[in-house]
Image (tube, rainbow, N blue to C red; front, side):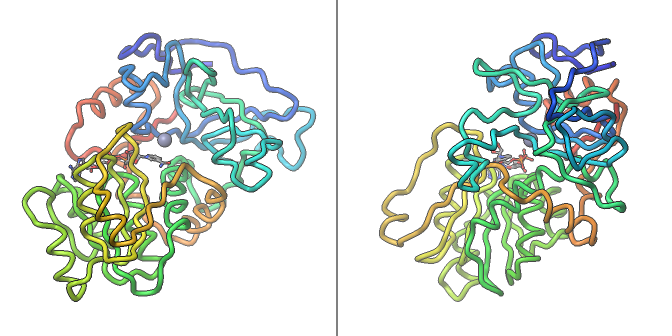
Length: 343
Ligand SMILES: NC(=O)c1ccc[n+]([C@@H]2O[C@H](COP(=O)([O-])OP(=O)(O)OC[C@H]3O[C@@H](n4cnc5c(N)ncnc54)[C@H](O)[C@@H]3O)[C@@H](O)[C@H]2O)c1
Ligand SMILES: [Zn+2]
């Protein structure tokens, strides 16, 4: 099969490689669409140490089952599917408590690190265990289904946040994940959804997708603007969707006393925390990791047309052009959001 292989850091080759062999509980999926994730772009240059070459990356994908292992039940060749980006063991202590996103020794598709290597979906075929599969509703395209993962990351964070109808939310960042946080906050019944980012084009898009107020970071005193919009109190809930000190600080300063701040951004290993503001205002800080049960509801929202995917797909392109798109994303080309590749 053909595959886009990261042969060394910052270097891809389209190669002819063997079709993956499936285990008894696995299916072989013919990949029809696969998204380039920010973590793939950061992995490509070696900065995260999570894509040690050679590796076939790609964990946001959808396709058609081509072949099933002998122990597979309930899935057939021809089924249109997507799958979880992580492979967890069902017998793990956390999985058995329903917290499979926290299970030990979880593997991520398309990642190679000192602990494991698991080829992903920038290829004609990928092997995945049956317990991470989800059936696609008929009216959800492969291109859109390749975006279920980032939507589900956003929904997991929303599900971990206590939100009341007409609450005011403040969202730090209007990147890919934040665009879904914004749409889901609207669905969750928030009244005002206040968003800040450095990128004005992204803020304009955020307004189209449900933000009620947007502010350019740096040019505005955002906590003061939020207080102005909330009878002097601050927002009821906050989301950090960038992963740096200035954004975390601004979100913490923009929420009211007793509020919950949910943390999604994780590009920095460490950030500064305004400790006294958190303690004396009795804030609740909630980390949100990956996805735990959100694939199916997201597919339902997509099928019902309740979540907009189209405006966030910048390009749909053949897998052969993947290396060029990786470079454009790495160079932070303006206006680029999600790029979906078709093997
Ligand atoms: N918790 C999880 O499970 C999980 C899953 C996926 C991604 N993430 C993390 O979520 C974060 C967002 O991911 P993404 O794919 O949406 O990234 P993205 O690059 O699309 O978005 C980041 C946004 O942050 C903005 N930004 C950067 N610095 C800023 C500043 N000082 N002030 C205001 N805005 C600023 C950028 O302009 C951009 O719009 C990343 O940290 C990523 O690692 C977490
Ligand atoms: Zn991802």
